[in-house]
Length: 465
Length: 142
Image (cartoon, rainbow over all chains, first blue to last red; front, side, top):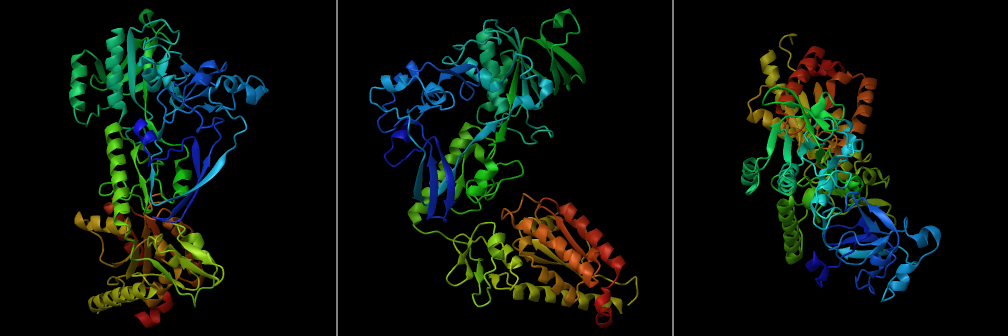
């Protein structure tokens, strides 16, 4: 991350949003809204004094998963690149109540600028790689697991922060009261994944991170750790070996789906505990297990705005909302829009090695395009007969790729060859038959059709007489 | 022409990426379906102009089917959305002109649905067989 931040040829625009994209491979024009962070990135040295002195504490719902606090002027996390803080205008005393301005006073370089405005940046680029990641599944959507109702039901992200030495508990695994060390911990796999009610797909990372969490929890607390799984999916290099190591370490694995987590005790041994009710599919019956702590291994979801982002860049998403690659096996990096590539979880759930591999592949693909200096385009593109075109604009509306423009001075439609993918939807829409798709013209299709009908007629005529 | 021996002539416009591949799969897995269907490959079901369907009926087809990708699965993002909006209008128009709308079928068949493809063709062929030759040009076509 630091290397990318320091590289002279890499321009990082954080806290920014793409507003619009026009053009095509080699000639994209991207409008970017660089949001006002109220800190001048040129002057800021990243010393962190403002963050230290800021009097306003805000619950950090993002990085600390709601367990810790950040200031109103903050960097998302200690190693963030670039190390320039941002003022959270919704919580800053100056922006909400008109007083304080302490950060301005303590800043040694005078980088704080309360009047900073959003700026619009237009950049010309040849290729675009989309690596917008994922959203974690919201465990509250499964009410029977009790997240948000029972304090000692945690998500895997909360546990991850708790296990970090620099985290909100300083690396101690404790219940929500902040001091009690759990003696039994249940980890529920596939929360929001492999479930037709939520997401049918497997999120791929939860099994391995659950094993890691199980290992660390056992190591730190000597608690009994129970994994409730449907299948253990450990299909990576050294992953299966890690699973076997966990089995040897005495971590319990129970195959079965958890029905509910409840605090309604049925006996003295369940008193004051969380009870996991589950179907033990290896034993073949319903069982109950009292524990102190439940960890929900939440799955991965497409970003909440992935469909809008896909539309912005002229690519498509699958039914779940992941960006659709050109071919799931043969071309998992490119998209149907030339010059727009995808990498990482934006394309589908995957772990870190796979994301790194895909990111490198996308970069290599872009480099080879830059190296060639020219691109191959689809040969079967649409063509407008300008004498026939009435300029009605039906084709422009029907085109999924915005590849048709209206020439005002000639009052006709015009196909941008570099953008056209040859689907022919325009040819199906044109009321005056002015637009045709090369290799699939009306004449060709009708000839083929007449040939077929002629053949059938001849064939059936002999049979019928 | 006797009723039993009547063989319907069916033209199918199949999208290259889903339904054509689905038909391919039906063949590769040796599924049985009537030979009354002649397939015309189009890049996308969105390429099928309503005129092409009408032309097929005019030239002697007894049934026409347009098969495309499932909504949301279109290789060209939204090409089949156009099909989904265009074809019901055409169907209404066919009924208006006196062609039984049952002779025209629009359906989504993906590349993995070879069995659905075969079944669709079987059902549609039977339906058209029951309807008999297209009345409008029965005099010239018999």
